Every structure is written in structure tokens, then in C-alpha cells.
Image (cartoon, rainbow, N blue to C red; front, side, top):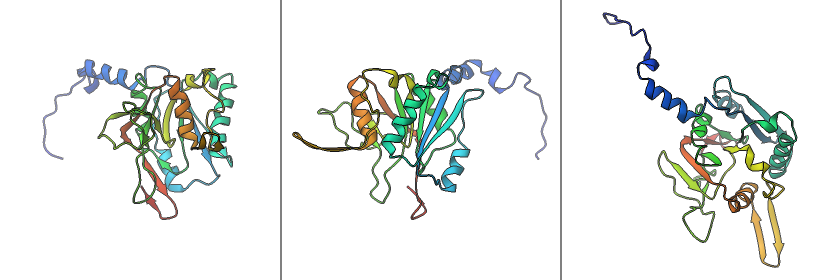
Length: 239
């Protein structure tokens, strides 16, 4: 320890710049109700490295936060069943947000707190993660400024809130009120491989939801500050 003369700042660091402290609280939304249900589809076994990252995930002080896991269900059916059960629950249906996580996604400790900051402007916001493999693609699908509408992966912007037509589901924060809209098509999530008169229609459960919700005017974005690892257990690599 170096020699020093101590003159105490009795008011404290946060009190000494009250304007900045207040702005920080407003931005983080923690002064509001940010009650959140985290839903996780799983085959029943989650790797220890993934669980370790979840154990460090911070939630707002003195706010309601709970987890719900759906075991052994097809992923689209799992998400739909979880949300339908939330809507039918007298308490959980009054909460504000749904956070989706998947059994191979590893969010940063402050990831959820950062996503709350984005919910004034958007209805769903997710962290950035990539498909597995050397040629991995960012799960930021489609630029809303481009027509015709598409789900082509975008090149990520650096530490930005990037609008998109769709997102992966590995770490997404949804406003629960979206699912209370009677105009939103049910089931909410559906894995499609349909062959019809207009040709073959193939959708993963995430883009099925985003196409239907986008038609109703809901807005989505990826917060590229929130960097989510995608764990490849077969090769013990985080992409």
C-alpha cells in the first residue's frame, strides 16, 4: 500500500454526480417493473459450462425473476406450450417480459440488464450469437430497410442496437404483451416443412414467429454489445 493522506468523500461516488446516476437508472429500467420469466427448451441434459454461465446471469435488484424449463419437446412446441401456460397463469400472466434461452447458449453476466435498456424502442431484443462452425453466420436476420423483406443474415455492427426482421432464440427478451394480441397467429412458434400449391415452405420456429409478428408492426433488434457464446459440446468449442 502506498502512503497517502485521506480526505473522505462522505457523500459517495453515486451521490456526487446525481444527474449521471439518475440517467443510469432510467436507462436500465430497473426502477420499473421488469418482472421476467426465463423459458428454456431442453432435451434434459445441459452441459456444466453452459450452466456455469447461467449461474452468473444478473437480474435486477428486488425484481421478480423465475425460470421454466420444457423437457423433451420439439422446440417450437416447447416455446408455444410454455407461453400458453404463462398466459393462463393468474400471476405469471401479469409479468412484463419473457426471456428465451437455449441449452447451448452462454450469455454474459450483464446481458439481461443490457437488454432491458433497449425495450423502450423495440418489442423483442436479443444478444448476438453465431451458428456453429468455421463458417458461422450471425443470427441477425434481414434488414428492415430492404425490400422485398428477407431473412438474410446481416453483417453485425459494432456495439450497436441493430434492427432486424428476425433473430435466433438463444437469448431474447420479449414483451409479454405481444402474445396477448389476439391477431398474432397461433401456434406462436412452429417448425414448418410444408409443401403446397405455391411451393415448399420451410421455416424454423423462430422465423415463423418473427414473420407473423412483423406483419403486425412489432419491431425487433439485436444488441451487439451482448455477446452470447454458442457452445459446441461435441468439439468443446464456444463459437
